[in-house]
Amino acid sequence: AQSVTQLGSHVSVSEGALVLLRCNYSSSVPPYLFWYVQYPNQGLQLLLKYTSAATLVKGINGFEAEFKKSETSFHLTKPSAHMSDAAEYFCAVSDRGGATNKLIFGTGTLLAVQP
Amino acid sequence: GAGVSQTPSNKVTEKGKYVELRCDPISGHTALYWYRQSLGQGPEFLIYFQGTGAADDSGLPNDRFFAVRPEGSVSTLKIQRTERGDSAVYLCASSPTGVPSYEQYFGPGTRLTVT
Image 1: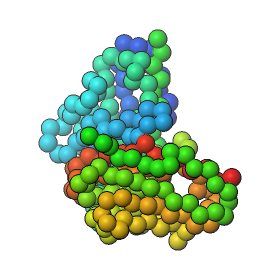
Image 2: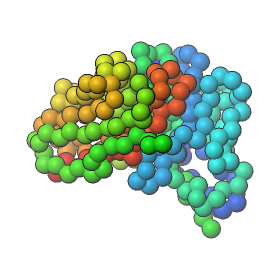
Image 3: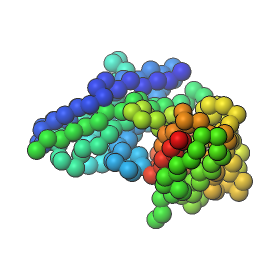
Image 4: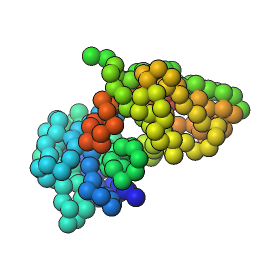
């Protein structure tokens, strides 16, 4: 069965600093991987997804993630943090091994951006 | 265009009462998902509809939970004899198809509080 682990429930960076949010997955089949962002009192919004094409995936708002099969990782990065990036970020894997395409989420990482 | 909408946005109910939560997916989306997000956790899958039928209800925690999608668009999640442990944000998502690489579009959620 698929699973996702997000290391670090809280991450704090300074404005302009590198953002690195970690995600490791476990999957018995080639995974589809997603990063979603959740702003307060809003629904989840897709940042980017990996669907077995290019391993370096670029998303919205300057975020990108690299699929590394050898490390079973899909870490999210952004070169320079903005105040508007403060939100909760969820990594998810699509359950392709089952009968549905439900998403299996990690526990989330709350990103704080300090001025 | 209109996104996924959910009503009500907030629901407070007493223990033991019955509640209904509504989801209006994006027009034309055949796949519809319900998730539950408890405080400090990532969303957890409840049920998946493809058209009118529940293709996977393996995430429903017990028989107090039931969901319908009679015409293949709007869905209602029904909870009988609510318990305090049911308090959470209930998220609905829709997707153009059930293909796993497709994005799921999330609504803003219904915050359910059982007192």
